[in-house]
Image (tube, rainbow, N blue to C red):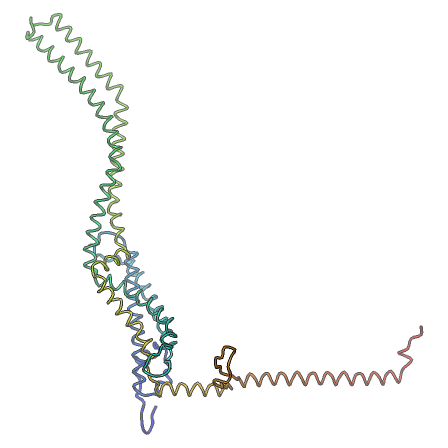
Length: 405
């Protein structure tokens, strides 16, 4: 706005967008001083920055939650999850931006001085709580991104330890079942080996007898007896094998199936260990790696960024922007016929209250009352004239209104 004593600078498109982000009135700011324009542009910049950080934090959190689980040191990016995270991040950033914009726009200036009074602070507590929640929500995903390399190393070690513990527990669960099967198989093999040893011993004695080591060489009575004994043992071995064939096959199959089942369970150890790669586990590790103080100051940084506009508005001194705004509000109220008599009466608790008079509404009510009153008077007049006319008709034609009993 051009004036003889002062010319308001023409705002750029970016500054106007920042004004909108701060929830301020661009019409008034164009007519205010440059300092007012800069103040509200800075407020809008903080709101935009908060929304941008919220978008990054929300997108990263969603990616961490939904990315395919695996080794913590596997840095490959899963494109479908990344696209989904980007979409959610934009939506989340817009939500936080809109909430922050509402908080800043709804925060008044209190008494219009630099001092923040206790009453101003108490009135701002709901907005401060909302700001704290938003700041903490944004800070946690940013923390785990700041310490990603350290977290990945710690998480990989934790995954290896988890996998080792899982393998030990899994093998311990199957050990007793393997032991029972192996004992049954060992018993069968031991008995069979005993028969084979007896057969070998009989063969050896038979061979030595034929060679004359135990007396006369040749196929004599003793040799025939040894031969019959050897044949009897071979028959016993064949019978034993026949009797225990199915049981041995069953035990072998059971052991093979149990081994396959164990291998499948052990194959799950990577999946179980990968379950550690979640958002909660990363936040815990971030606190462990960074320590309480570093985590506190990172969170405090986002809290300061989030709450700065609230306290900043309470510290603002009333400027031309505020007075012009008040003037425009009064003009609009006057144009709409609204009158406010401040501190006009006290309520039952002794609190001073303002009297709000809506003259246009009062005018409409008065018009409606006058119209209804006029309609009532006309109705009464019509009824009175009708009565007079009926009286004249009765006087002129009395016989028509009298019926003989």
